[in-house]
Length: 357
Ligand SMILES: [Zn+2]
Image 1 (cartoon, rainbow, N blue to C red):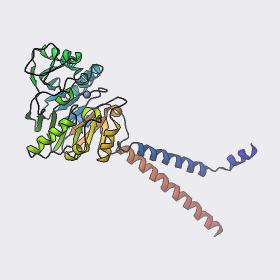
Image 2: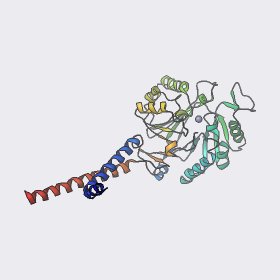
Image 3: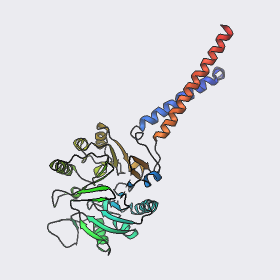
Image 4: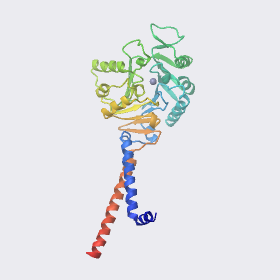
């Protein structure tokens, strides 16, 4: 006990400082290593995104999907409406973003396919906002009069969504078809499926591109491998080389979508995932992104994610995460400590030599 007390007395302030310094550097290194995917993003303020001519928001709707696009001419497009569980938070987030832009209506709502995690908030959105146009999948809800040989979904959530749409008096409703148009200088294109009918609902998901200032977004719904192949073939047939700056990863990062060939063919730069479950995004998908050196953000960790495009682009996330300015400040502090440490020990040495030299 006495020995220990003596030892503790002998520890100099310099030793304590050194130990704290080593712990500090180790913690920071570990922190940077854990967040290596995140630090490649520059997280800007929400205000910078809302000030951009083209804005895209990957809304946080849990294990579901809903994406809002605001075009430079203030037209709005909502792709999917999340699930029944997230309908209240979806309306809240839409209210916040639209109000920030002095907007109040949805010009176009696209329902990619009839699954409950993509159409669950449809009635709530229609109740809360004026929606002018709706594009719905070529899938009928149970009880709807049959049009040709269309697939019929027995999902109750889809039934509710379809009946909410048909009860809207001032809303034009059409099926999703190949289409393209321009909105305030941004080009929009919808690539619908090659076939009128598919055996699974996910395959109805269209591919939607939005291009502004040479930056391209690709939205994919829950499209599986088969539809990715169809899409790449269409591009080949049209001799269209598409370079995707921002990819919304299909099917919440499922292992059954987004092949490495797909990522390579489209030269994807950044990826966004709408997901929040123990199995999504899948390890297989994250590995493919890592192999292609594509950084990603997921609503599971980041909450709502906003992308603002002007000459360049800015990103914001609702949840705090380690960002580049923070890293720079930390590195500056660490360098300062190292310099101060070296300088003070050199000074001590000089005093020693002056005394005994
Ligand atoms: Zn889904």
